Image (cartoon, rainbow, N blue to C red; front, top):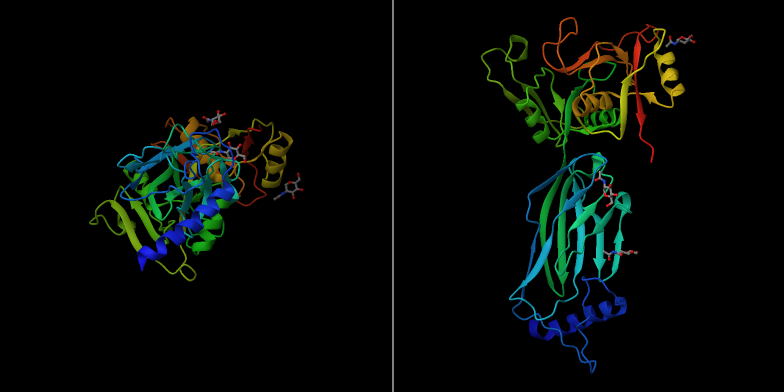
Length: 361
Ligand SMILES: *[C@@H]1O[C@H](CO)[C@@H](O)[C@H](O)[C@H]1NC(C)=O
Ligand SMILES: *[C@@H]1O[C@H](CO)[C@@H](O)[C@H](O)[C@H]1NC(C)=O
Ligand SMILES: *[C@@H]1O[C@H](CO)[C@@H](O)[C@H](O)[C@H]1NC(C)=O
């Protein structure tokens, strides 16, 4: 039964490939399945296809590039290479469907959705299916699958794309524990960031993040990082650690959120201005500079990646008042580096402002 069906299936596949076959000068495509007299010589007997991404994860920065390695080969080695189909797909860190990134057969290739124009195959010799990504965005984080198909053989391997960044707790203007999961996702996006993963929060905890309010993470769990156990935070008897409320109802349960931001293509700065400004005046003053009032995620990114340090409290886009300290000193609020927050003052109050000016290509 199987022996009878297989040649038919193969013929069908071959036909599809021949139709797609166009002359090609890359290393990728070897048109060896039709020999001189037009007879099909297509063997897959005993040759095992292998696919390897060689790394568990690749790190980069927002705005940067990434190289996701992938290699395929046969055992035993083929006398001549064969045409394969390479497909890269992606499962976002925040969850959801696996979606197509790029498909290549011979010289034909297509990239999809938000990846269009930002992904290419390296094709650095036979068997190289490495994916090159440019202009990385926060949303690109996640698990990538390199899948190689040859006839009926189909092998794949996984690699995670992660970005270096900074985790920050976020609470909206209307106060503590007001966000369901969707609201939390939106709140991070509004601050030019994305929901933090557990791994990102854990790393921040290792770096000293101590926060007594529970917040949503990308996987739909609610957790909070404690490095200095105290009475109002579950008591001094409880050990330090990332405390986990587990998976909560995404619609009905409400908490704060932990957001994640990476480096910026642009600059955050405290606006030198002769007057103190109310919130509307602050927005206008940044616009007059060809900039915009900075978002919370941008302030954190500038603090983390460019060492922004300023003792002046300034308005941010969400109506909060904050300042960034990388070199702690007397009269600058913090004994440790961090972003000092003064909550959400009435918008008519007069303060300074932080602006963000993006780098335009
Ligand atoms: C990313 O790759 C592009 C094209 O290969 C290159 O022009 C650019 O300089 C790279 N960017 C960074 C940040 O390395
Ligand atoms: C993908 O297709 C484009 C044209 O659509 C071509 O310029 C490019 O070389 C192809 N890349 C690969 C990896 O085949
Ligand atoms: C800020 O001051 C301007 C006048 O300079 C006024 O029109 C505006 O309503 C004030 N905005 C707030 C939020 O108080």
